[in-house]
Length: 184
Image (tube, rainbow, N blue to C red; front, side, top):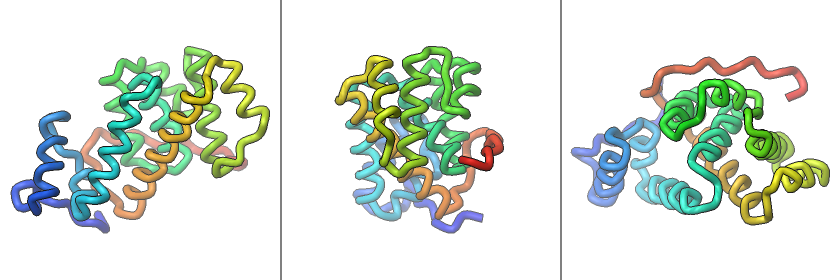
């Protein structure tokens, strides 16, 4: 049962209505997470601005979706796992990479390095080791891309926590969270 209410775009306040309309036009639907965020147009606007800014960066949409999957698994967010599985497919992530991403892996070694780095950022709350940083750099990522990976982690931790607190009703096909090892 959801703990945060969703906003009906038809009865939303003017600011929320404008934001929800943009989402509807862009996605063809208005996901429950964004409808719940619309209870505070400032929250929804912040989410959209951060997401939009990262979309202009160097990391591809596919890599950003794979990073979102890593965060969803690490933070046990069923809503985000389901959403980013669908969005990952739309961004061209293969089924094999969607599955591998659940364990911070990918067929492309450079993408796998980014996913492992993101997992280290989450697990260590930003206090990554020199080796973690060296590994992502060795895979070809410069400081700008590393900043974008950290930004993607931050954005996805926000949405993971938002959906976990709110127990947002799933409006994407469900995906089972993998069991986490005891040391995770």
